[in-house]
Length: 394
Ligand code: GLU
Image 1 (cartoon, helix red, strand yellow):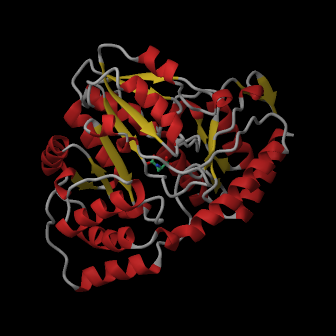
Image 2 (image 1 turned 120 degrees about the vertical axis):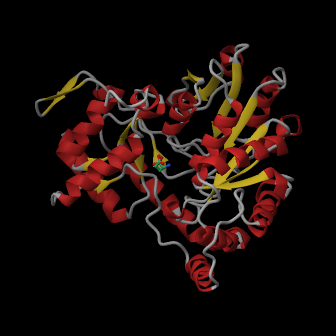
Image 3 (image 1 turned 60 degrees about the vertical axis):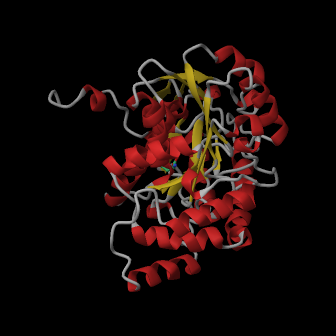
């Protein structure tokens, strides 16, 4: 331990992955844990994508790909950006990476210097702060809370900006809250950012297709922001391809070039078979994955109803992603079956121990009043899990 770098010693473990590992471990001991911790669709990857991967294996795609991705995949990414987001990117502005997580890490590594501040409207995805810290920048958390539907206001944004602010990370639909910014809300935030032309914007749109009626808007579609926005996306969530690890960015060319250089020293190009399959996924009409979104929508209603039927959960109605993020602060200070619940971490651990339901503490996402529950699980599992939670809290 002592021989390890300060960098790794001070790095927190990813709370989402840690909770999933804990649930797996308990399962391997024969305990029937219901895992609602990981943001992972429980669907199979659609057959037409699997077929493309099989074809790629048979076509002997076994060599290194270009570091930033196959040319025809980058073309497909540009077409997708145009079709879904009305964004004009050239292939030279695109870098394909090993998951959107690596895309975000590349961007942070190439843009941030020690002392730079990274604004994170909370709740934010767990790895944003860790990656910004790895890049030796300072995360600056801007709390929102359920009363403002987990959205940062223009006034809050303006107040949080300092001369050191280098980057702000937006994520809509949001993990963990499910919140979706409307076009008008993004324009109001853009009006603030227009006053600060040196600030870069990372717009993580990985959940864009998983939304329940509110049109998802891309920040880079605002002309005054285009030249300083990095649009991040990937295949994991919409296409049930979490393990395939394909993410990508559309960015100003000089940033894309820098990410390419960074990636060339760290991982090279991403997995060649997954890249070939990604072309089929991106070229397919979005209607091909609508059945999963419809199913998520039903589950969202189910879990909201079940949570609201219990005392103590303050839950809003998220417009996207597959998470609910209830405020559980009404339980703080209470003793349940001999366990004192001081905070959200205690609460999540209590649910794991007593109800055998895995969730993630809101602390990991910068909101200590909440827990994240993923409803990327079958209706039966959700009902069973909430039944157990009700019993543990009775
Ligand atoms: N993004 C997913 C989640 O938040 C996957 C796990 C992770 O990479 O954090 O659960």
